[in-house]
Length: 365
Image 1 (cartoon, rainbow, N blue to C red):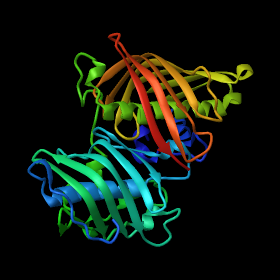
Image 2 (cartoon, rainbow, N blue to C red; image 1 turned 90 degrees about the vertical axis):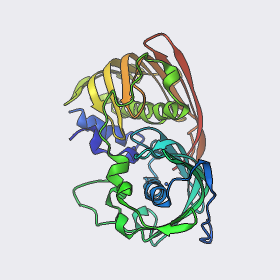
Image 3 (tube, helix red, strand yellow; image 1 turned 180 degrees about the vertical axis):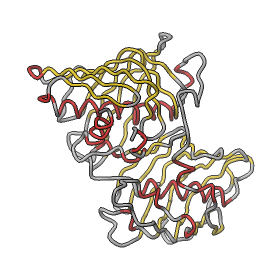
């Protein structure tokens, strides 16, 4: 079992660090259905089946993402590149797609509301039978782009879960039964909509090269990916270790490296030392290097979490390969949920460049 055994949209925990607990254990996506959509955003519109195959399955993945487990679970990573952040609404779930690469040259951007229909949808969203998207989402493909203002997905069904396999619901989606109304037509979903094709690519540290290690190579979506995924993952590990501070000094060992934990119970803090070799995180990122992690100044676990990562940390896979010597990250404003959380910080590259992190994101449950 490795870090990829936990799917990207399942960064979750019943305490604010249960995802981290899983990591530590390893370390030993309208209204009435009139779904006319807008025409091409630029060039020729991608074919309707391609748009349906990608956007419909992505929407199901977002709609069935976890909830009720703190701010750690308000994000769905797009393994190849990009990220989705979401929060619940009275009608369903509102999602922002940032450079979400879903394979076959298709990228999704924009904000939309997902409205779902089905019995017993709380807490089991996998019971949904119909899903409607309304908003403005741009689907860009090699042949051009299309703005989708509405989409209806019907015939949603899932195979039964395997009792011993805690897999995300979208992995069990029966794409053969889907009927998608989008771009003025109703179509089915072809092989390009296979959930594994969207969410389980093979990536490594050099999948997206960055020869000069320039922070300018990182798009805004990449910065979100680092802030919402890489940093959030490391923060959840730190949080978990802070919860277990009385455990004392210990080392977690896994196939791709070690994590040494040195707590200071008297000061209610802890220090983490990583020695990782191409460790795959859930969701497509790969982390490599020798680096340390400490709670940041002013950490207040009642309102958020701050951390400082220092050393040599290389991040690759779903972002251009970048080596950092320092990562400062803090999330605040989560004393009560839902909330507009502030995520701030600074990336410092090995070549001496710096780039700020500054995002406000709605988080809930």
